[in-house]
Each structure stands twice: as C-alpha cells, then as structure tokens.
Length: 472
Image (tube, rainbow, N blue to C red; front, side, top):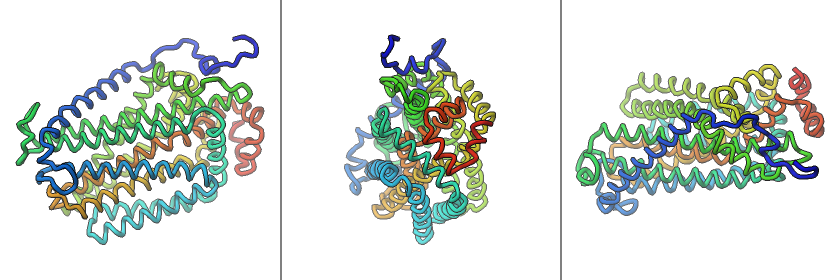
C-alpha cells in the first residue's frame, strides 16, 4: 500500500491463509434452504388451487379442519406489528439512550402482567400462567440490575455514537429487518399452505398436486419448515452481527485510519470465507430454539387438555432449554466477533474467545453490561404484543377451524416466535457493537487506553474495576 493511501478492510484485518472454513455446514445450510423452498412451492400450489374454498379474507372461508386464509391475514398483522415496534424500539434507543434501559424494563413488566391478567380472565390458563411467571421473573431481574445500569448506558451510548459516525450500521439494520420480515411472511404463508394442502378432512387440496393428505405429513413438514425457519433467521441475524462487528473492530483498532469500505469488506468475508462458520454456529442455536418451541407447544396443549403434570414438566423443560440457549448464544456473540476480524473457523474462534475472555478478566465487564438482556427483554416485549394480537384475533374473528380452540396454542406460539425473531434481527447491530468492543479489549486492551482515552476514563468512573479487569 502506498504512503497516504487509505487501507481497506482486508488489509486492516488480513488473513494469512484465507480458506472457506466449515464448508460442510455451509453446504448443508444451502440444502435446507432449497428444501424449504421446495416444500413451500408445493404447499402454496395446493393452496392456490383451493383459494376459493379457503376464503379470500378473514370471514369467508369454508375450511373447518385447519389453518386458512384467515390465518395468513393474522400473520400479516403480526408482521406489521413486529416491524413497526422493532423500528420504534431502535428509534427509542437512539433518541432516549440514557432512559432506554428503564423504558424497556418497565414496559416489558407492565405489558407482561397485563397480558397474563387478560389471558387468565379469559380462562386461557396455560398462556396466562406462563406470562405471569415470566413477568415476576423479570421484576426480580430488573431490580437486581439497577446498580449496573450506568455502565450499560455508557456502552450503549458508545455503540450508538460509533454507529452514527462510521459504516452503514443503521442501513444494515434496516435491510436486515426487512429481509427478516419478508422471510417471516414467506414462512407464515408456507405454514398455512402446509395445513391447507395436507390436513385430512373435507379438503379438496388432497387431490391436487403431489401426495395425499395425512396427519403425519402435516406434522413432519411443519417440523421441517419450522426448523429451517429457525436456522435461516439465525443465519441472517449472525451474518448481520459479523458484518457489524467488522465495522466496530475497524473503529477500535483503526480509529486514526478507518478502512474504506469496512461494511462492504466485512459483509464480503461473512458471505465467503466465514459463510460455513456462521452456518455452523447458527445451526447449534437453531436446534436448541427448535426444541424450546416444541416444548412451548406441548406445554400449551397439555394445559388445554387439563394435564397439569404434563404442563409443569414441559414448563420446566422449556426453562432448562432456555438457559442452554442463552449460554450458547452468549458464546456465539463473541465468537462471531472474533470470526469477523480474524477469519477463523467456528470451533477455533469459540475456543480462543472463551480462553481470551477468561484469561483477560473481560468476563467481569461482560457480566456488568445489561445490553444483551435488555435487548432480549425488548424482543420479548414485542413477541408478547404479537402473541396477544394473535390471541385477540382468534377470539374476535372466531375462524371455523378453531371453534374448539385447538389451534390457539399453535397460532399464538408461532406469532410469538415471528415477533421475537424479527426484533432480534432489527436490534442485532446495537449489541454487535458492544460485543466487538469487549472482544477487542480482551485482545488488545492497550489500544483502548491509547486510542480511546475518553471512553476508558468514563468506564473507570462508572465501573472502577475496569482497571483490574483489562490488565488481568
């Protein structure tokens, strides 16, 4: 590079021997995506051929055996709520940074209790009890977090300041959120189309296109497309995270000579050399979250059937799986930041990141920062809103297929899932910046002291232990 010439991302974070890591996971991901597209195409074809039978809107369906156009309209409303609320949530983070954590915690608690009370008043015991337990848990957590809020506010403010000045962080967030919404719409239509095409009963679609109708086909295909949805949405979220990590890594290490095309360079690496590694890390989370979704539906079904023991067992199992999901995603966030800057394989990056954090003592900083839990709270709040919307919609429209309430747990659970995934993708850039700063501090703490002295002194003021942590 000539003197005075601006470096690009690949030059700033050079990989000595570039190679496509974890390529087998990348190929498997592509195969699952193509499988999802194939199932979607066949199912939607069956839905199109019986469109008049399933209705063209909310009320004119003759389908009394499974999901119909009524449900597609519901999921359209759910997606609209998820997009609007997620965008508003991002705007609130920028406009009210210092109050953001308080706003998120209080709104999440109030909305959780309100939803629980309403569901219990309607005698929807499974949903009401779960919402009530989660709300009580959030109250306990939020009270314990109050002393840690000043440090978290500082880190969030730093992340937002960098996002405003460098790269295309908010553009990536918007594009990623819209892609998530588009995929959510595709999944919603496919989910309904699978029921329309293969649910046995007075179903004219059974004689259309490929295959006949059976409960086994419905269950098998729903399992496959839901797992695929988890994996694809996780991959999208982690690709955004890895891309944004490249931008924040550039700010941390190259603040005096910020690389040109940092966002583009980080995205290119995410979609080439790191594609397989991102697919592998996303697969692990997708499997765990998919198992949690199964437990959620099983718990709600057991509750509707009056099986108290089954409800308790599945509720406990769901909590254990949630803890496992949190632990894996915690490690993934820092591993993907490592992958973004150094282009390592997933397993190697996870090992190096964990060792680095423990050796450096940066885990103390990580534990003091609430942004991850707060953003999870925000996503859960939006998921609550989507679940409540779905529940109210089923009550007030009273579709023929749900006269006995059998489909309520399934529809509410999928509405919750869509809202959660869309918001998680929208808010990824905020948490990505903070995660990358922690990884970069663990890798080279002297850069923080030398190139970002103002931030370092502010960190010392709100969290004096930072001096011992980064010199551990």
